Length: 146
Image (cartoon, rainbow, N blue to C red; front, side, top):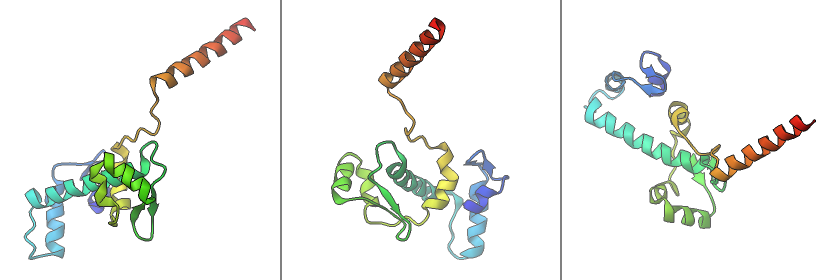
């Protein structure tokens, strides 16, 4: 997938165009000649699963207020204290699969999908915006009075 992503023919602004599945099927046929993997449904389903798993790991590591989670480069997995995991999994059941499993494709999939992923890291509440506007109004008023 990463090889296809890096070839502009198959990369349509961080999304694969329609012919990438067929190209991926041909690539896999060379490496695994008797696997009989087809673009649809086999590869398409596996890619969808990988993307969902990647999104879960990415959210654990990058979403605002998730600073208690880290990435163990050696084991290729998300790490956190047990209490943190338990609290998070109570709310986000899908994250339970990430607790004890490695995800060796994280870096490669991040290079493909991260551009399109919103994390809320720079999100502001209405109160934050009002406070910023009030601060700007005070600064403008001070400049006018001088």
